[in-house]
Image 1 (cartoon, rainbow, N blue to C red):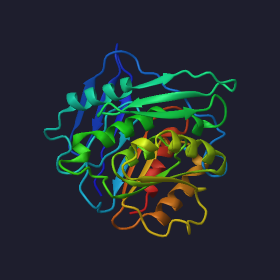
Image 2: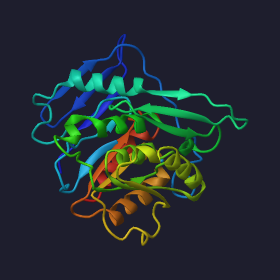
Image 3: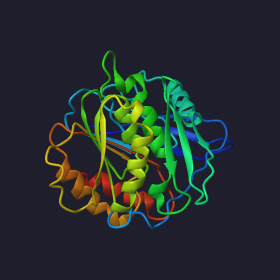
Length: 291
């Protein structure tokens, strides 16, 4: 299983985007500053609620694999990694993806608000968010990056999109942004999260159903518990910002093992955090990932 890691590291006057491959390291300076929000502890998906790298187990087609971070464009792994990839173009794609997401205020006494994510074809995903609740109630940067990655020509390939008529399962869906993007690209999607987020998921499915060219439904899934409601391994498992809480690591790994098959491609996008236990949690995740 080939892997690559992509992360954002501050340094000097501007942050630097570093691509780490087995053979070599490349760096690209990015202008400006990058900020992010940190999830609260109320949402760990193991009983309360939440990213993207890619591990693959012989996927049905051959999309690029690698680890993606919330503040970096996706990197690829395998024979092409670090050899001729246009890093500048990837950074531009990432930057345009973040620019394509904006918030559209709405009149709401509960301070709810809508996040608008513009697709490459000019249509817009509208994602309801809640002003209070766990971290699953808002659209995080890792989800935006993964959404835009699914649209890139490098992933989609030529002709029919790589996700067209493929079965897709999203873990820790929150607002359902990633799963809905996949559904608009022709995938048959199941977005999953805890019981308390089902209303939000269903609301966002209803708001965007006119864009769906595959299918999408919401189901309850608590990491570490039985998965009899998901009998067939999907072609793809998608995750955005799910590698964060130490207590949710083992349940997440168990769920991935239970749900994936030999042909499943797992794409995991997450923010590489350097504070506290986060580097250790990330290391443990990839060490224990089911091979």
